[in-house]
Image (tube, rainbow, N blue to C red):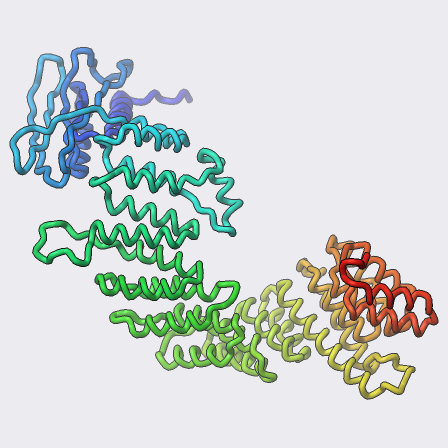
Amino acid sequence: PKPKAPSRALRCRNECCREIETTRRTFGSKQTTIVMPRHPCAMIFTTAVLTLAAVSTVAFQLRPLPSVRQCGPSTPTSTSTASASGDVDRRILSTPTINYHENSHNSFDWTLSYASKSSNNAVSTEEVPALSIHSLLEAGRIDDAASELQTSSEGVPASTYHAVIEACCAGGFEPKKRQKQKKHNNRRGGDVDRIETAAQLLQSMGEDVTAHAHEILISGYARRGRWQDASKTLSIMEEAFAPEDAPKNSSREIILPSLNVYQTVLTAFAKSNMYNQMNTLLTRMRRRGVRPTVFTYNSLLKIAASDKVPRWKEALSLLSQCQREPGVNPDLISYTTAMKACARARQENKARELFRAAKDLGMKLDVYFYTTAMDASAKGKKRNSWKNALSLLDEMKERGIAPNEVTYGVAVTACGNGGQWQRALELLDQMRSNSLRINTITYNSAIAALSKAARTESKTSQQQQQQDDSNNGSISSSNADLLWKKALDLIRCMEKEGVQRDSFTYSSAISTCGAAGRWSEAVDLIEAMKEDGIKPNKVAYTSAITACANSRQWDPAFELFNNVKNDGIKPDLVAYNALIGAGMTANKPTEVYELWNEMCLPENEKV
């Protein structure tokens, strides 16, 4: 069916909405003249204008022009003109005065104006380019908008300054976000940092500067990691709007920086590892009556725990401050994040203390809390740390907390670090029975457990059978067959389940085969690694070369050694020693001599 044409009421409403939008964009003026036709929907428009005027302290005057027609299906939208008053403080404007009468131009005539509290005179007006500045911003012409604002600074409302300053401060230039920010800037007017322009605009506001303008600039500095400028701007803001030496009976309005502003600067300090300055600012904001919340402390704890160098001491200090803060109690996220910082720093004892403290407080523990505590045990330096991790796994099951994939992965890692490959494989079976997906990291941890066990038993076997040449330094046949076959079985399971294999997967498996003396399987894994599009690394090559050398296989060992150099990898002493030993066994004196000279050459002379 033919679509029904929109009704006249709908068309009139759309035109009125466009007129309201035009009025909203001209809030820079303290008095605006808007022409309204005689039509029922004009009442809707007038009501909206009066409401906006009362909220924004902008004076409006609605009056007709001789050229205005009625709003209808074929009539053009009513025109509007904007004007602004002189330098009048908006804070002294009182309730608007509204006058209404019907005139001879077939239109309504509304007059809305503000009167000063100290004077009965009406507010004077002058032109303001607010509409053009907003149009430039919408078009992405930020530099032109800033230039227009600087040349027409008189009479420009604070909201226009805020919009331009925020556009100049948009984005950030921290290293992790540099590429993303570059794409963002290309869409908004080029890869240009306009933070200095924003600072100049803030200064050009003069006595009309607002606290919100300072907040926008502080946020821009913080995103760029410029904590010095962010801190300086905050100090200027405090002195301008909330001086500490202001008399108590002063009529001046005191505007304290909000908690969000302080948190922005605190975060900038923490990301730059300026924890002394961070603690100083915490003390200063408390003195001014702005109390940090648990969210404030959790944000700072997250930064301390995620640093490249885990700041576990700073994390414990923040948790202690949160405990002493009046009216603030650390939650489970606080303790979990502090434990994460201790776990990454391999501070198992500190993490266990936090674990017991949270339990004593009667908190409702969750899977993330237990997983973090298990991770601390998995990374612990004690020989029996893996037992602590499995004990926590059993405890959470007793409490009815279901472990997830990450929890089992941490437990497998703990067993792998402790050389408990049997327990690691049992955990994999539990994951399959619980229909949990085993990811690459978990599989790698299990294969690494096999590799560690194979190396340990290989060393033990070599010490016990140094005089027995028939064994060639490999481990006993029963353990050898068990460990390297298990490693290959896990790789086949990864392929069957669609789990991606990486360089660590193959390197650990090759190391397992190498320790067991299975040189042919190690070479095959090197080729499989290349077929998967993974470039063999130094660990994989060295393990395969060692496996060939221990089995007196000179030719494949020497070929792998040449592949190492062709791939641009510098062989290490382990590879040289293994290959020289294989050459001596295979009666290759010339090759051994060349390898010895090459190994003894200075680093800058090696090919």
